[in-house]
Image (cartoon, rainbow, N blue to C red; front, side, top):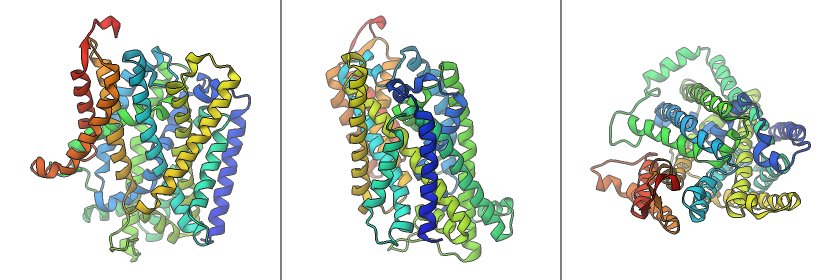
Length: 492
């Protein structure tokens, strides 16, 4: 497929997004930008959450990851269900009862302003890095298959992508994102399903036959039973649960969408429906991964490798999609672009919201509506520029599966949030010293990183995977306990 066709697909899809943005952003005000006017239908949010959760990294790394990790990612997915239940039953009732716009406002109510800003800062750091890496993958593929052939430098598609997202979220904010996410989800799923269909058609085999062959070759292994392995099934299950609690339940981006629902009951229905859909969608992506590998094995297609001759998981899906047919290439580009937009538009809005409410305290300063509008637009642009900077600076370091990097970042940056909320919600008779919280929140990830780095030597061969997030949260919790004083529960 020629670069001009790919570019045309990108332009047409972007135009469709701008149409949705125009329809949803009409008569939008600051309440629509930050809260969606609390009128979003729960089923629309639930469906759109799939695209927002998957992102470009999942779109490419989960199918590609089957080559080296088999189906063991499913253990994390099953853990997601546990995490979503905690969000629906514990966190959402808290957020709705306190009528929060930024969820980190709870930390100020519970501990003080230093805690609030610490929580908000860790979210900003985590999302800025994690979401930028997700978007980087989309920009990287567009560059490799379109702009590189035209002699255009890497930073150009990065600027284009960021500029587009900035423009269509500029006015409507979260109100627009809720609806664009539904479009994104549809194309993500379609890309996977249609690619599997075309592979079965090309091979002349049914999906069942392909999965049977993959099973015989060891690619459908669900659970790793070796306890020292970084994908040990119990670690995957616990990691999935805590990743969901932190990366969804304690994440302003994901929760801001949930908080646009009309009431708590609708938000809970949305979350539980999303958890069920998420299982189905990830099964589809894992089956896609098996199909991609079988296509390569049965046709002699050479899987993409790096300079050392090691297969690059993130390139398996695009390389096969582009070799199958023009149609599968178009479908892949649509799915990839959808993934890129969905992983960045809501995040950009959430970063703006967090800074406005947790650092500038819009709700307390008595700003006029015109002042709020002016400030949040400048902040929105500022975060877009930071996004661009991270994407460009990461370019020389892309040499392995990005899904592992994203979860590594999450394990270190969301751990303090896990510890803060766990202490705040379940230790009612103690209150942490507010000024000590930033120091505890910085020390815990550093200790966790060192522990992960040397765990094999220190813990009899044990290797930490995503569960380092739990250790990080526990260290934060213990630090808060050590720097706390007894109070009566009513004063918490």
